[in-house]
Image (cartoon, rainbow, N blue to C red; front, side, top):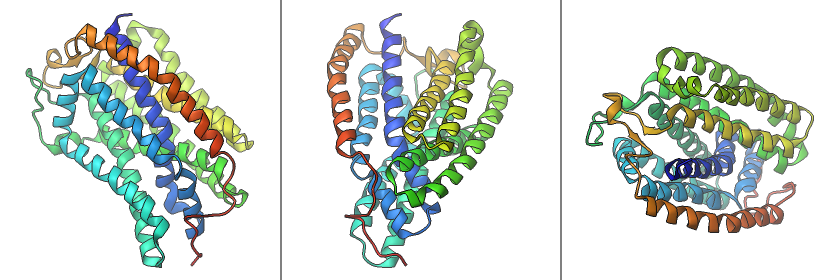
Length: 342
């Protein structure tokens, strides 16, 4: 395995960490409007309050890793997806503002506004990530010089939109499982009911997307044909979806969170396998595509980046374990976010 592939897998692992950790924050925002009352919505926000800002660091690490390791990819993606990226940044900022201001709001109209802002920004962030993934799967109009040749509407094709919706549903499922661990017992029944519906929705959407991909994006299956062992990955995905459904039904919520995290990793593995060794596929000419070889930094740079990452990983793992222990247990009553029900 060459160093470019190792670094490609490293970036994938960082993105997976972000999707798992900030994914439950985003998922809480997605299902936030469906909670029963203002007190329950306040509890949901308080459940993620100690975690969301630290979890967002992973997207900064992923962006930094992309700049350092695959600078041409960073330049092309962030120029071609300029408007979605600016909107993503705006939503990340607005979500942070809504979480903080929700805790200080005292008037009903202010509470409703910041609740809506939190939910809309969370849904938008999840959808934009899915939109980018969908476009990278089908290819974007990339010229030989690496420039993006298209407008905003080029990005809003049916396939990327479906992937965007699928991403929203997937993270909503993840967020529900996190809340099942954190919230009081009187909220669990409703969350379980929502979870069951979302699991069915995700399974059907993913199956439909697979058929559409096979028919209209056959290039996404090339690596699967070269290495049939990869077909095990989508099978494992359905297996872990079932295990997640079963463990939630039987109230094994910590196990469910593990299953949900593995499911997210498997989804990203399916996406990575459909691209490798490409990172940005050109829909104009496959020769214009950016891959891990023609878009990477020097081998020396990649080696230094790998060494730095290997030294940092133990500290990050220790921090995550410590944080989980400090903020473990259910939230039986609201504190900073406590408001009267209306």
